[in-house]
Amino acid sequence: MIGRHHNSGHFETTHVDMVPMVDCIMVLVIFLMVSSVFVNDPGIEVQKPDVSGARAGDPNALLIAISADNHIYFDGQEIHLDRVAGLVKRAAVGKAPVLIIRADRGTSHGTFAAVYAEARRAGIQHVQFATAKAN
Image 1: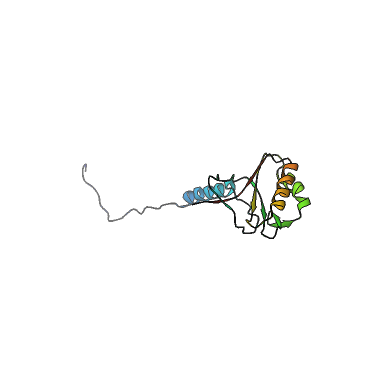
Image 2 (image 1 turned 60 degrees about the vertical axis):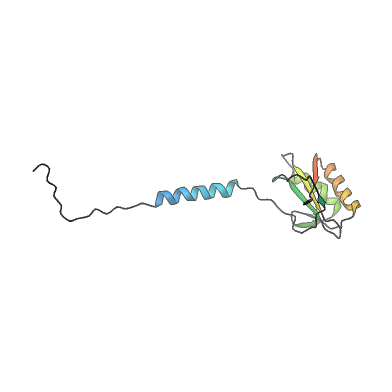
């Protein structure tokens, strides 16, 4: 018979397959992890001087920290002044990086100047120093 529906009382169940969605999410998570940039902090906390008009730093910059007692840190390790040029040159292979010097406000000017001179001797063209933003 045309126009007559046969209702047998059976319901068709739907099934949502979650595997393709989970696969897509995993690909996105892996992509984001691989493409993220992580900044290696020198490992010590310094009290930066307050300066107005400071710019934000480059996320690919190399960081050197100088503590209040004039100890120099690169990549979380304390280093001696005579190793600054070699380590910075090795870390800068194949790129033209910016070097940011994070010096504590209690650091002697002589230590800061010596680190700056070693960075320039290593061939770093762009040397900046980190400051706190003045309010």
